[in-house]
Amino acid sequence: MAALYEFWCSGYDFETHFALSAGFYVVPDGTKVTMRCECGWCSSRGLSTIEQLPTEEELKQTLADIDTDAPWMARVRAGWARLGLDATEAKARLIADTEERLALSKIRKAPPHCLACGGIEFKLFEWGRALESLPVRHPGCGGDLVGRRAGHARKALLQYHPEGYLLPRT
Image (cartoon, rainbow, N blue to C red; front, side, top):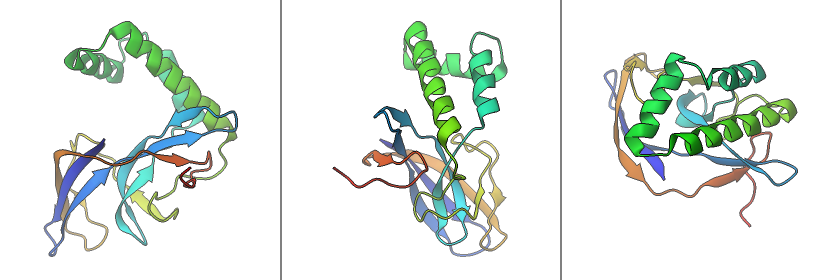
């Protein structure tokens, strides 16, 4: 399932729907590591899905914060409650997911990519999926790029090499 967004720009006639979806990395031992991504502006593709690659230090801090009252962790726990998830199971999945991403960060050499074209020249929008700091400056024309969540769309989860390149479907 992909999150579906609508975007438009105050600077010119630009309006589009965008499905933010990723997949997972398949590491050499066959483990599938959940991919994180965000919207961004690719220099060659425009509005696009961009890999989000936390550093090893950020992932270690995530693990250290899980049993604390860090603000981000309070939001995560509230989300679990809102979705009716068992907190113990959800916490165990968060730890496992973070440890898998930490292991991936130790073997990954390539920088984040645009998932549409593989390019590395992009501007990652720093507002996250909540659209909490829109509008952002539209890199294409300088107008205000605004958006809203518009629902969900069905989209296949794709498989990626640990360096971020799409693997052929099997």
